[in-house]
Amino acid sequence: MPVLVMKFGGTSVANLDRIRRAAKRVGVEVAKGYDVIVIVSAMSGKTNELVGWVNETSPLYDAREYDAIVSSGENVTAGLMALTLQEMDIPARSWQGWQVPVKTTSAHASARIEEIPAENIAGKFAQGMKVAVVAGFQGISPEGRITTLGRGGSDTTAVAFAAAFGAERCDIYTDVDGVYTTDPRISSKARKLDKIAFEEMLELASLGAKVLQTRSVELAMRYKVKLRVLSSFEEQSDAAGTLVCDEEEVMENRPVSGIAYSRDEAKMTLVSVADRPGIAAAIFGPLSEAGINVDMIIQNIAEDGRTDMTFSCPTDQVARAKKAMEEAKSSGDINYHDLIADTDVAKISAVGIGMRSQSGVAATMFKTLSDEGINIKVIATSEIKISVLIDRKYMELAVQALHDAFELEKAG
Ligand code: ADP
Ligand code: ASP
Ligand code: MG
Image (cartoon, rainbow, N blue to C red; front, side, top):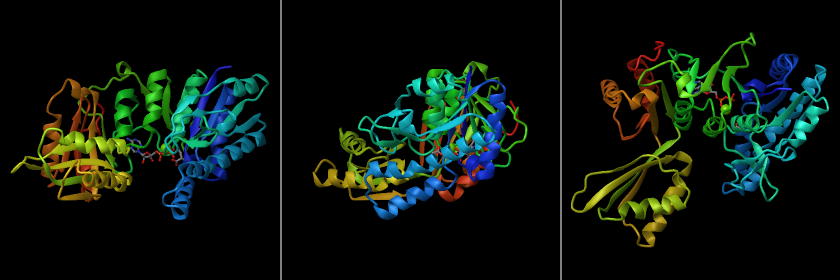
């Protein structure tokens, strides 16, 4: 039988009624003759609640226990989904990550899937089971401990199963009906895309568009998984959603295809460091060793042999970054007058593979922000994206202005 993977996110399994709706969708595919692997998230809000309990109990928590706790939301929805399907006379059972087993690295809270042996589930399909409901987001480490894959990780579970089982397609059911030119919650002019290239989706995801977890797009690209994003709320089950596919299949040809934003970025400035050879290595070496994901960097003009060095990193790594810098200072490796953390910033990015061949994108972006009176604090570019750091209070305005400037509401 051909295999289909269907993933339901938090809002799509938020209560028993939603679970029944999702199960009906699964029933439609079973009736078409598929063996279905259903990946479920925790009920919406559940994982946040669990993370909150962990932080309240133990601010410097043991990451192994964090994973044991925050993975539990998915166990509940997996069992409920299996029961709902059984009530519809569809042979189904639930699987927690360790039962499959979903083998991962031991990097707790951000583990990577290493292997998903297909035998157990394939064996059950061979015996007549129609649906395997698997708890997303979780796996088991070589040490036998429960791991989680990072927030939004159920998307990655879904794509990894699609790859492991050679599924015909991996359908990601969520609360929007596809991938848009920007977050439809921020801009009412956002336009749904019929298709988006893997590379663009990868950039958008890593720059903040949380509709798909970055790692899931990476896996889909590597293993050529046919990946689709669609709504679990729409009545008709043939709605096409958005297909994430190879660049050649995308018809649109424009410099920018989407705008992403991220609130989770902080700007750190080391005030007055010595402007000497090796200074960047002396700063960014210790940051890297401390596991800080440094994104953007600027070194200001030097005066009297001293300069300011600015970098950005995720907001939740600010404390660790400070500690690493203080340690480097006290060991004499670097010297600075002050370390200023600005957490009231947001990163806005324009993404498009058309940028490779069309110029002027940066100029349009800077002019648009300037016309709105928005000051740019840091800039970073790569082949297919331009990102800027701005004051958080202008985030929505910036997204909307750029969406207008690149005429993304119009199909091109
Ligand atoms: P789920 O719980 O189903 O995994 P998520 O909340 O993780 O859902 O992802 C869906 C959300 O992603 C949407 O509700 C939307 O607000 C947000 N989003 C951000 N950028 C985009 C985009 N470019 N296209 C569609 N949705 C986006
Ligand atoms: N429940 C997890 C989270 O909220 C994983 C997911 O939904 O993908 O991050
Ligand atoms: Mg998600």
